[in-house]
Length: 107
Figure 1 (cartoon, one colour):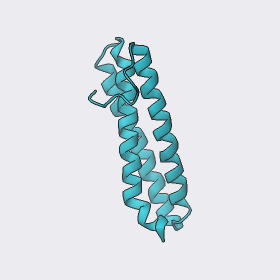
Figure 2: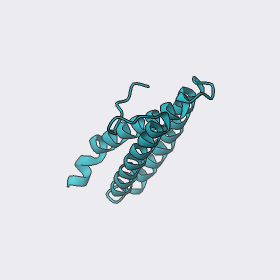
Figure 3: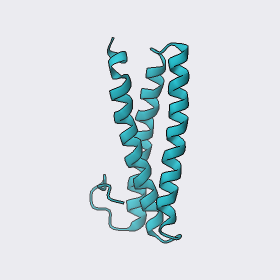
Figure 4: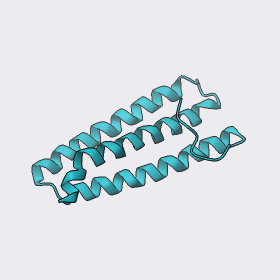
């Protein structure tokens, strides 16, 4: 877990976990907005491609972050690590969607 904490100096592990959970929620909303927006400009085949890619990416994200969580063996660092991982990967997906589909959305 090397993600920067998106909140001002959380003082407890639970505050840090809540901070990353909130960051994940924000990133997830942006990802879903971009995904829905991209689907409006794609033909049926392209929509299917995006759907399959998104499903595979979600599976990758969730499995990757579960693996990171499991490294902590149920300890207090596990939830922080999992939320940080989910948030970081979701931010990366937002950037990828912008790069891949942004030009189509600007047409």
